Image (cartoon, rainbow, N blue to C red; front, side):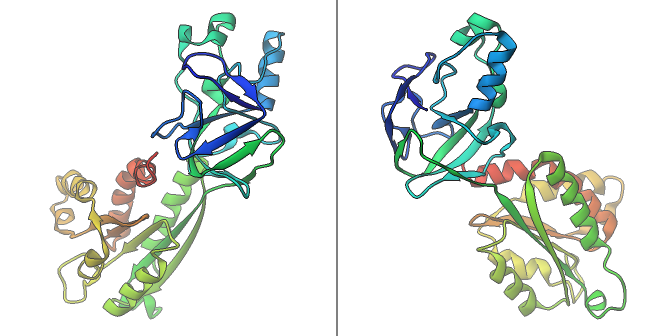
Length: 299
């Protein structure tokens, strides 16, 4: 079903066809220049709610713009896509804060399914949508590149411990949050040209680049000086936090020249080479990583 209303806080009425522009569904009160342009609720959720309360509801009663069938929408994640040849929607939010007495369903039943299982999306490609149209679900898969810089490790003289540690920390985070991901690790020598080329080759296709090693002041510590010109917007606060927090106990931690920043939609972090330092940095980076992604994508 496709449903619209001219006022907020009211149930929506079903229509046969809708025009979707870059602000949402034309004529709907919830359209606008924000991240919740279109709301969606699965028929599967509505049926569960009907069974729980032993009563029936119409499409649009939960103020959803689009009622779907065939997918459990609440299992999706922000940055996932729903599209066909005419439109493209990007998921921006799962659930919402309940309006309480401001919601007609809540006033009637004392609860509502939309805050828990409804989702919201913004328009990537405008077009027309009709009842019966099919949408393809495309989950966001985060592409991650971990680059270990070490002359000795690249020559096979000792085992890289920091790269696998970073990988494990990211796997734990992404699994906990329910996001899909792909991680690729490589080891290269402390070589400016090879590092620069590796980063440039991945900027357009990778969401996250993390380097480990080469953040000190030795003659072979070339990472920061090579990567910094490739960063368009620096994020100094997170690295300063790590230096201050862990440097209070171990002053050597304050010596690191680690940096963080972004180039277009790719986040870049340059971490020290020791596994202990990588663990400390990843502990703090993981706390803000998805917030950074959502900021980059304006959601």
